[in-house]
Length: 210
Image 1 (cartoon, rainbow, N blue to C red):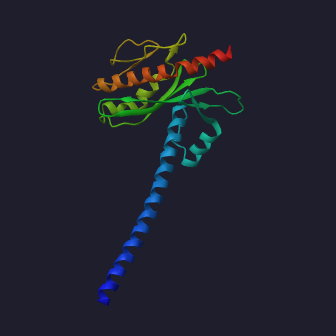
Image 2 (cartoon, one colour):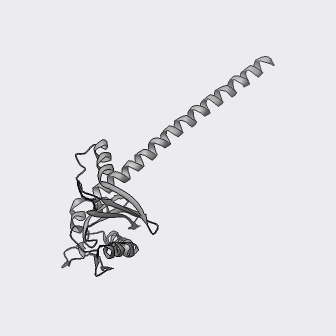
Image 3 (cartoon, helix red, strand yellow):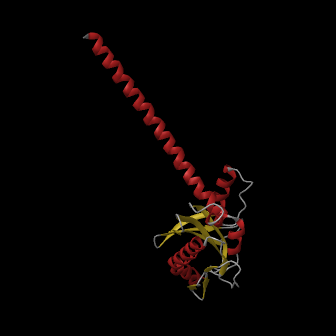
């Protein structure tokens, strides 16, 4: 009987110790995951501002973000600003974008130049679109088309378009991806949706400048 009690006690102690170890490991992993997620946000925001991060390490990106990027909330919407060295006012503004593609929700950031009308850069960082087709939205050949395009005109969002490949383009249209029409439609829809959401805020900034 005594041996049975000792065995049960030993087993109970082992269970408690293992539980504590697992809890500690899980907490440590959770902290690391959260830190990595926070860094990924910073990395993609810096990238959305048009900075080449391909040769930057993590500390370099962290330093660049801390030095140049500020975050605020406007009417419940997150907004990020980029301020150049020695400048007093932002030279670029960025905001998160998201919407449905073909197979997944697309997440990214879109940055505007100081005129609050012209796209400086766009970046997609999370999606599950088809490799070689819809997944091309994260490739530079597609993203680079957005630079210089008009997102706003006369205080209102433009009818931004992801056109069929080879179409005649205007100042608010980019070429789509062959074989990925629905993904392109999703990009078009999310850009229009999120541009509309920030219209009032950007107009208020322009109004304060006058």
